[in-house]
Structure formats: structure tokens, C-alpha cells
Figure (cartoon, rainbow, N blue to C red):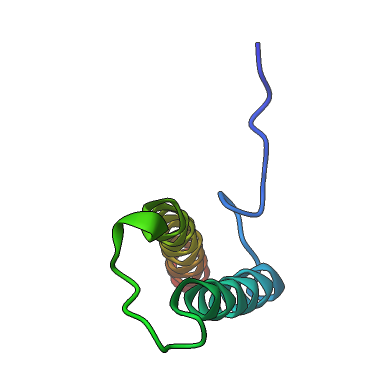
Length: 82
């Protein structure tokens, strides 16, 4: 039987959200700079498909963290009010 593990994705704190969003934003900007040679070329070309997949997958993880944070915060607010 597995224990219910609390990770920063499933139970994020405000500090976790701030770190994840900052790291995501910095990595996306750096990847876009690398893909486009500092914005001199278009970023949607066949050579950049792996990096675009990386940006998409990291964006989905960030959205999951944000969604879990807001769900937990809403749950705590409802618990305090009741």
C-alpha cells in the first residue's frame, strides 16, 4: 500500500508557486532566445519541434501547479468559514 505523498505539484505552497513560475518564465525566455537566435528568426520551424514540445510540457506542469494551489486555497477558505 502506498502512502499519499505530498509533492510540490500536488500540494504547492505560495513559495513553491513563486519558484515554479519564476523558473518556468526564465526557462521559456531563454529557450525562445536560443531557438530564434535572439529573435532574429521565426520560432516555428521544423528544427525547433523538440524545444516547442519542452515549452508546452513545462507550461502544462505550471498550470497544474497553479490549479492545485488555487484548489487548496479555496478548500482552506471554505474550511475556515464553516
